[in-house]
Amino acid sequence: MTRIHLLSEHVASQIAAGEVVQRPASVVRELVDNSLDAGAGRISIEVAKGGNTLIRVTDDGCGMSQEDLPMALRRHATSKIESEADLMSIRTFGFRGEALAAISSVSHVELVSRQPSERHGYRLEAAGNEVKSVEPIGVPPGTRVTVSDLFFNTPARKKFLKSPTTEMDRVIEIFLRTAMSNPSIHFELIHNERKVRTLPPVPSRIDRLLQIFGGEVVSELLAVDYMNDLIQVAGFTSRATLHRNTASDIYFFVNGRFVRDRLLLRSLIESYRASLPQRRYPVTVLFIQLPPEYVDVNVHPSKEEIRFRDERLVWNVLYTALREALESGEATPHLHSASHKEPEMIPGLQPTPLPREPVPQHQKDDFPFPDPPVVASTPPPTPLTKPPLITRPETSLPDEPVWHKQGAEPNLPSSIEPIAPIVDLNRGPLSSLAEAKTQVMLPSSKNIAWVPLAQVFDSYIIAQKGDEMAIFDQHALHERIQFEKFRESYQTRSLSSQKLLFPVTVEIPLQRQGILQESQDFLAEIGFELDPFGGSTFLVQSVPADLSLGEVQGFLEDALEDLAAIGKVAPVGDRVEKILARMACRSAVKAGDQLSPPQMEDLLGHFSEMPTLATCPHGRPPIWRISRRELEKWFDR
Ligand code: ADP
Ligand code: MG
Image 1 (tube, rainbow, N blue to C red):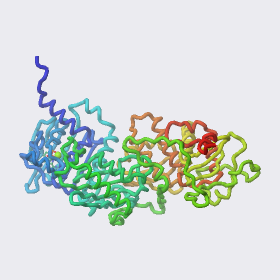
Image 2 (tube, rainbow, N blue to C red; image 1 turned 135 degrees about the vertical axis):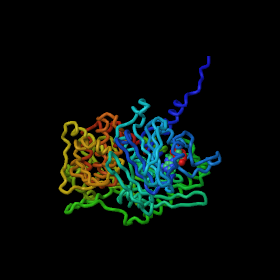
Image 3 (spheres, rainbow, N blue to C red; image 1 turned 45 degrees about the horizontal axis):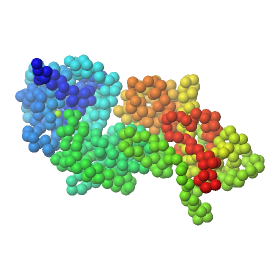
Image 4 (cartoon, rainbow, N blue to C red; image 1 turned 90 degrees about the vertical axis):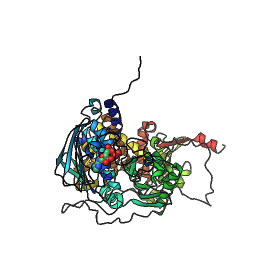
């Protein structure tokens, strides 16, 4: 009895197809790659229902002959390589000769193609890899591939297709990244018969990025330009002031091909080490050119993974290129190129520009980038086991903490300054440092509440309660207080919203608009109302009352990224928590904000009322306590 047998051609081709075609976006990627290989100057991508029912890519490239049309659908049939040696120096996107075969084995395919030298073209129809007909047809030069009913003959795989919005997001991602690396090509994206995006050809990469990301992001990009005798690294990367919640705005192209590569990502993150807040990622678009024989692109059927012959060299070159760019801080050239169109304004309605919050300088050292970045976790605070270095006050006071000297003397009469009334930390400008310095505060005789003594580095509050002292992280603390407050208000449906007299504009990139649309109801519940305003611009009509206008753009970016990352399958409760946490973070005082004594008092007052805050399982610890006994031990008392 033999147990081993050869698989039928049909099963074998289904298995092979599975590696290439996982979803509509992979079909789009393969078809667009073919159009690029065909030397197209215009590429149009049309999909219906996120590509689940229709995918059509049209180009004005070199076309195919009548004989080549059926050949194109055969497995291992390609015009791009011939010998094994060619594998070592691939200069085209395709070369495996399996994309069209794979696609046509799981869908209905129509190929329409005309070579420019011919007077007419041909139309081929196929289903499940069987050619039905080839006939002449009058068409302009180029190729049009139409794929309908994806996975019609593999119902099990069809079940894995996500909602049209999710699949569409992935198609948009392919569209954008292909457009990014080919600025001289005219791109067009049509969804459900509606033109979603047109990108006319532009003279340079930065102009293309301007079309894709908009002026606000592009003005934060630094030019990367580095070359040695083997490798060239060119492109753009954001100043440390612009960062994202995930690595989704990091794009690497190796010899024009978009790749996902851990080595490149780690080199990038390493080059930003310590200059980005914890778990934040830059916006980066980099083009790496090196001789084809130094990269193996034949590692994965989707060709998004590659292998470098000399990894260390690539790592070093990338790191050096990025460090140079970040250190020089030189803005990108052609920034004010004419091709950037500001969103049209409605007469009489001037959208207020959104100020971007700079990253406080000292935060840089607080949060070194964890390694590896993908599984980033918060390091536990280092216990204070050693006494701090002692500096003699008269010779050096480098970072000058704002100590309220009188407070250091014990048992002063409690009649000194009345503590100012509690202020709402969310409203009004924070009081000036001068005010903070003139106020005098004393540990309260009562032992129930934490009493703030001083703020140091504009980020931490030193406080005392009975026989204990503590250092609070002002941002972490306020963030938690806000979170608890928002959660309660959400549950009681009492989150307040603020209608804006003059709507402000925000930019939502195309690939986030699907998730925005899906989350609209839910955003409305927390007080957000947005209306589309053309392209990537949206008008914000109302905002949650606790969020300042300057934080709206950043909040939406973070929130939509979070929602996209956890996906629709996540329970509603989780999604709500994520969003409320983002809102808490954005509405909390920042590290670097000077706080007046009443403001500190207010914060610690809330903390004392909500003892569970200190034990909350998420996020960074807001408090670090030191007992009197511990202090005494430090000083050998
Ligand atoms: P590969 O791209 O790896 O060669 P494909 O299955 O994607 O394999 O395509 C098979 C062949 O069909 C290509 O080698 C090319 O000659 C031809 N072809 C496919 N798409 C186009 C197109 N848009 N324009 C011209 N020729 C095309
Ligand atoms: Mg191909």
